Length: 98
Image (cartoon, rainbow, N blue to C red; front, side, top):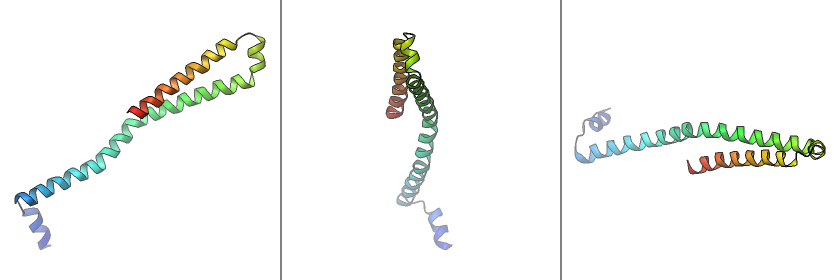
């Protein structure tokens, strides 16, 4: 108990600097991971949505390939898949650079 009282009342430069450094490290150790998680949460949701859209386009295209070819919609299907890939790439690049 006496040691705690001495630690909190010690105003020498060494004690003061140590306490400030300790407070900064504690704040950084808790704050940086929490901030990173909060900032990446929205990007993660965008990436999941983009993956789901791409998955849907690929599965629908494969299951309905006969219809796509029969009606001459090959180019349209290809453009939709390329657009989904570009969206997913933008989401992936945002998470890598952010």
